[in-house]
Each structure stands twice: as structure tokens, then as C-alpha cells.
Amino acid sequence: MAARTRLLRHPELRAVLDHCGKPAIAAGDDPPWTAGMAALARDTGAYCKLSGLLTEAPPGAGIEALSPWVAHVFDCFGPARVLWGSDWPVLNLTGDYPGWLDLARALVRRHAPGAEAAVFGGNARTLYALDRRTTA
Image (cartoon, rainbow, N blue to C red; front, side, top):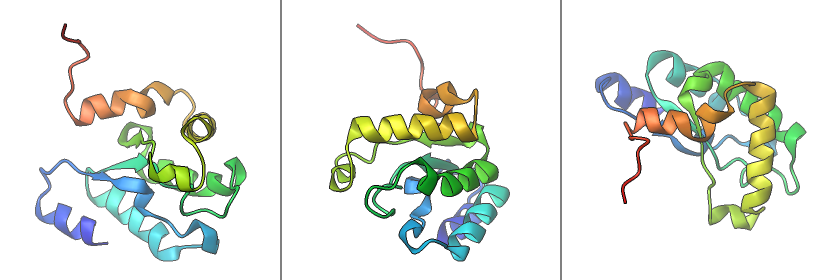
């Protein structure tokens, strides 16, 4: 995985792998993705964005179809290095924002119970060093 090679050269670089690395969900198996995700998470400090999965899945895919892929993401990166993304507007090709948000919430509850606040905001605040205060 090219991202791993680059991050090994620049370990101080903060990075987010978008769309869970685009696994070939519709194909049913993706050994290079599985190994690459494990290596990237193990060898770098990269985060992974929980997004883009519906566009890689068969039409109508739900929690059971996505669950093994999301489980692998959490197994590799842990709940402290995963952040949610909407993939909007591309998401509209295969679903909609409210449906993906509900599905993602269910997947996070299943694979990282108790980490919902982190995945849906806290990890992004940490990664991007965002201040929770708002300005008027």
C-alpha cells in the first residue's frame, strides 16, 4: 500500500485513509485490502475514515454485508483511530445520508460499543486538534 510506504518515510505526518481504503466488498473477498489495512494500522499512526462502503458494496447492502469489513477496520485501527464520514454527495449513487448515518451508527455499536461519540466526532477533534468551543 503506497500510503504505508509514504507514512513510514514521514511518521510525523497526520493522515486519514479515506473510504476505508475502498475494499472490494461486491467481490466478496479482498485479501490485498485485508493485509494492507492491517499493515497500515500496525506500522503507522494513520486514522481510517468509516465512509465510502456503500458505493463498494452490492446494491441494497445492509449491516450484515458491511459488518465483516467494518469489523476488520476496528480490529486494525481500534475505535480511537476511526472517524465517520458521510461520503456525500457520492453516497447518493447508492443510498442516502440518513440511511448511511443510521447504518454506520449500528455498525459502530456492533463493532466498537461505547465508542460512538469518539467515532462520530471526538476522534476528528483529536486528529485535527479542533477546539470544542464555538465562536460568535
